[in-house]
Structures are given as C-alpha cells and as structure tokens.
Length: 377
Image (cartoon, rainbow, N blue to C red; front, side, top):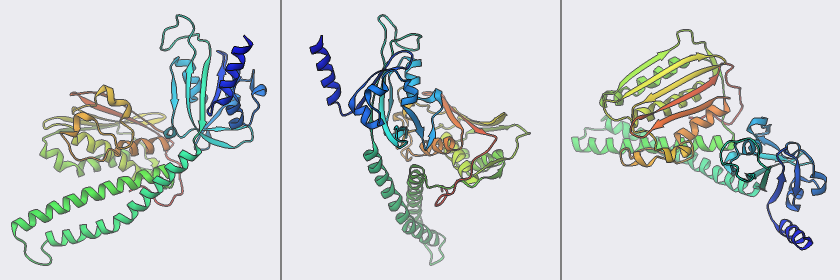
C-alpha cells in the first residue's frame, strides 16, 4: 500500500501540469506540486478547501460568473470540458496575479453512471497549465498580421483608384477587351481589400485595440440600408427578401460601424449561400431587455458535423467551398466577437440543404464606450 502511495506521489510530483482532484462537493482532496507552484498555494493548505475559492476564473480582467466556470459546467453536465488558449481564460493565483490557462476537467463517474447530464458523480480531475508563452507568441503573430494589413492597404487603394480612372476612360479610350481585363483587375483588387480589412479587423479584436463609439441608432434602418447595398445580387439570383420589424423599436446606443458589420456579414452570407429563387428574411423584434435580430435563409445550410466550428477563424463549410469559391472565413468570427463585447449573444439553427437561421440578441442598454486606436472597418 505504501509502495503504491509512493509511486502515485512520485508520478504527481513529476507532472509539469497542475493537477487538482475534487469531490462531488467541490472540495479539494488532492493537489500536486505543479498546481501549488502555479497557484502559489501549498498542496496541504489546499486540501479540504472549496475549489471555487482556489481556482477563480477571469476573462479580460472580469471574474467569470459562477455558472460559466468550466469546472462547474463539467460537474453539472458530467462531460469532459476543455479550455484552450482561444477561450481567453485566466486564473488568479494566491498573490493576486492572473495567468492564462489551458485546462481539461474530467468528471469522475460512479459505477454504472451513464454519460451525459446526471445527478451524482464522484468529483472531478482538473488538469491545467500556464500558457503565458503561447499567448505572447499568438499576440506577436497578431501584431504581425496587423502591421502587414496596414502596409497593404495603401498600395491596394492606389491600384483601386487608378483602375477606376482607366475604366472611366478619364485618360483615354479603351477597347472592349481592355475594359474587360481592367474590370477583372478591379474586381480582384476589391476582393483583396476586403480580405485585408477582415485581417485588420481580426487583429484589432484579438489585440483589444479597436474603439467602440456608441451613439443612438436605429437598428432597422441600418439593416435595410445593408439590404439595399445587396440588391444587385438579390435581383441577379431572384431571391425573395422580406423585412419585418417592431414599429416601436427604440433608438439604442451602439457603434453604427460595428452594427453595420454585423448586418453586412450575416446578410451577405445569406445572399451568397442561398441558391437562385430562395428566400431570405430579416426580422427585428423588441424582447426586453434585448433586441432580437433574426436572419433566416433557405440556403445550403451547415453540415451538423461542422457546426461547432462555424465561429472559428478561417472556417468555411465543406458543402459551400465548391459552390462559392470566394470568402475569407473570418466574417462570423468578427461578428461573434463584436456581439460578445457588446454584451449580446448569437445562436443559430441550420439544416444542410434546407437553410440557416441566425438569432442575435443585443442589450437595449447599448454598447459601452471603449477607447482604442481605431474602430473596425
């Protein structure tokens, strides 16, 4: 027995990751040396303590609500929960310092306990590590993308300006073939500008440097304005578009540029990924304390196996790559980031071959002003 205990202690002591074992009452029953070093707490001091006092989670310097704590989710759902660098979570050590973490929480099932939500269980094992170096590397990459995007905007804008002059025949008459080639050049340049702007927006979001400048705005007016910009594509594909909105919608304090980005991405996706003759519906309803924006289409839909990735960077579903070659795979990541920073939520339902419905809730209390280098473009 002592040999087994010594072997277990040797294994726990040699682990690079922090390990904390808890019982079903969230009390610490074991903690290894690596966890003690990370949390600045001696393992013997942690034993018997509530893990919710020991592992306090933060996102962007704000303490995470109790129901969103990954340990509690794992215990409640009786499922393994993973936390990666992208989740942007930090833990507070005993000395008050925050450090970013990657983590896995595995609930311990009692004999015969089924998987999935259940009452009971025997506690959980928590493995975590400090990902400060990984975050620094990720930030360096983001800063490089931001710098490169800034530098690319100037020559692309110049190309766009000269192309428009040539197409407008301001410097001489063109043959039909020359017009065709210049128009192709202009279209390709516009796609490059769109990509660079998306990369710049993503880098500003990741670095937390974009500004929020709220002012009272009419969400319905912005939605209709974006639809009018998409009218040529809507007509070309003979799509049926309907708009419904509550006549009593109040003005909400929000950044008009950010709200326009939300509508532009969701509505342009609906138009792009809905085949000819399909339908698109935009609805804006008052559901205090929120506005509810619904954008539904009868398009290609998102395969069930890929829906968990829909808001990640550079993701494009397999079923639309052959149908629509254009697309950066960054739009929905940007939309979700804007909505979450604004205190809202985005959800969706989708059935492959039948269509997709996005639902966005935005708080009537509006967006909070944020000083940054520049807003999103």
